[in-house]
Length: 383
Ligand SMILES: Cc1cc2nc3c(=O)[nH]c(=O)nc-3n(C[C@H](O)[C@H](O)[C@H](O)COP(=O)(O)OP(=O)(O)OC[C@H]3O[C@@H](n4cnc5c(N)ncnc54)[C@H](O)[C@@H]3O)c2cc1C
Image (cartoon, rainbow, N blue to C red; front, side, top):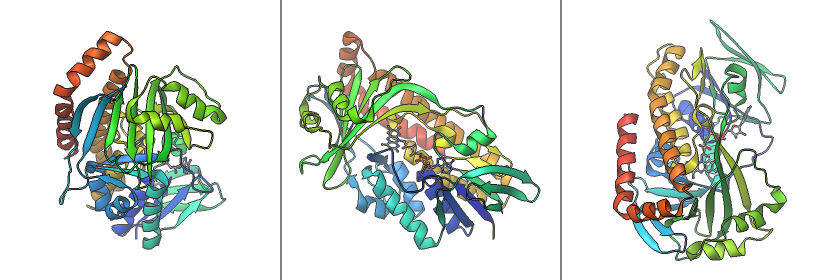
């Protein structure tokens, strides 16, 4: 039986572990954190990602643990809450997956790690890779807990600050995107069932249900590099960052208090040239291609990487050759998402009032076409 080590038990790592275990690989997962903590309150996943979660047997449980928006409706408002346009996201897959799912990050992890348990895949917490050496016989790893083992394949799924990438590709570093994202969690009023995006001057605020009881709001702001906010002041800083917003988000901003779950993230990305592998070691997910979050596709790309990698390995070709094909297959898809996300980020940061007003005026006629075109191109690149 072939042995694989998965480094990192986030979305990419858990998904790769599931996809490979289901295909008969002997899987070991290591995770640096001594216990689970998530730098994220909620996440939304579109149907292209959900369809891949279905392929590793996790979609139904994720849908039950989150808040699906089967209609796919995303309502666009201006910063005062005036309606601009409704856009419908596609329900992809057979049968169609829910168009958008909002879910707490911890719930997503509960589902994925629960499936790993069910398959008997061991996850060693508080462990990382100290060193790695490769020869004809495999990849030989020394772990931070003192252990050593050899593998046919090592998958680096250890996120934007990947330790495996730092070991093997020290020249590749994350770069700051110029944006900060604020997120806070609130009680969901029963009537709030759509994803909402509010288009402010130089800022955007979104509202997304993540469970029958909860929703989260997320706001993007252009921020100079190295801006730092004292975590104890995050609630008041988030409130103060979006004072000009009214409409449906106003009550949530008003209720932010020191007790509210608030998170600030300075957004970085990773643009890594091919190859994404060295010998039997490959990077997947954010470790290889972290994107700015404006398309909401990072989770989808991570689970797709996992499924594609596991499928390509099925034909039994030598591992390094398969890993080369994997990178060539996935890089154009990930680059396309990163570039689309840049365009959306730049448009959202428009500070000039006249150009902003023009963009809002143009939105109703163009928004649905942009979504349709994005998914058409994504589909073409992915197949
Ligand atoms: C502000 C923001 C909002 C976002 N919103 C969305 C969204 O709504 N929808 C969406 O799809 N995506 C979103 N994303 C992107 C999404 O969170 C990521 O693309 C996704 O989590 C990538 O998964 P991953 O498994 O590659 O990395 P991660 O989720 O970061 O997991 C990496 C894992 O590896 C572990 N690890 C790290 N270093 C080591 C090491 N040296 N050894 C062992 N383990 C290690 C970490 O502890 C972690 O558990 C957002 C990103 C940001 C920044």
